[in-house]
Length: 236
Ligand code: HPA
Image (cartoon, rainbow, N blue to C red):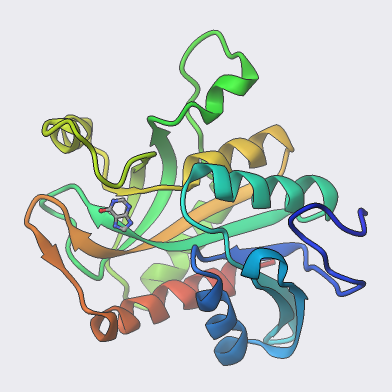
């Protein structure tokens, strides 16, 4: 195991086999403060805070990924390849793209379509479909059903653009049944696949792209709690 990388410098602090990754490093701190016990901070490089603690006696880490494919690409690559991390569970928000997906619903991202060029580094002679780990999908769906969360399992879009110049952009992805848009999971799934490790993205719907609806920070809390509970329970 590597002692330090350019972006993760634990100074001897432990990183667990499973890392939960919200986009916002202050969200990582909030999770450590509110859900974990025996917490130690293992990273503060670039304020991309990372913490390790226990949840019901299970060791788990939580660390910010930053926004977008390049950022999560770096952090997840280093965690998988230099720190012996087996599983990364991304927890985030996404914009809904289908009429039957509503604000506060939970989306389990079985696949992550993308317009990012990240996949091109592998020189695959075709169009690779980045997928989550099947066992994690099953466990997350089971847990979501147990706690009564309204859940959708399917394809999401990891977009390189939050603001896209093409007015037909959303419609085209909607037509293909994509449930929602976020900006990171494809890189996470590709890094996991290439390193022979496991990944899953779980999302709460923070805005509805077709219906122009958005949630407030307070309103997001309940669905955030459901997503967190699912992620923490399936952490191994
Ligand atoms: N687009 C991209 N990423 C997002 C969105 C969105 O509408 N909502 C939350 N993350």
